[in-house]
Image 1: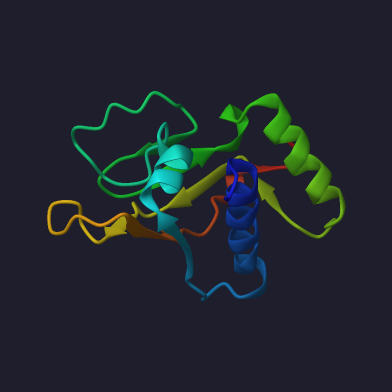
Image 2: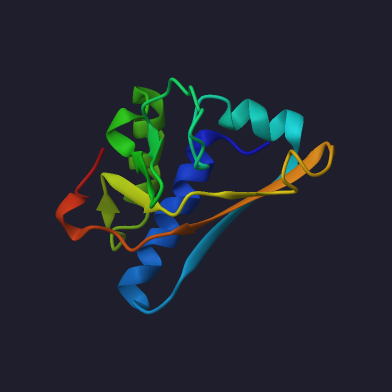
Length: 134
């Protein structure tokens, strides 16, 4: 099972592709059994949903884009990410990871399955949010 730390690390890596290829589009795909994915995503907004009542402040989604605010991660997650970053001194770190709201397949109202896939595009970083560490 993917952890929140490892998911955020993958998003940071995708965001860094902008440095090397500024014309590239990056997508994150999260796929697996609903029971496990829902456990990871239960408190996070990644899809546009007018009726959402998610309580976690790490991510926010509006009709145009979403944001993971890395400063809202818990202390242990920030420590883990800072340790990983030490091995990659050329990586850029931004306090916010912007993304287009995720699409879920299959849509819940179309078919009842226990396996689903979420896909969302990572948007180029806002350079004003560059930081040295969390």
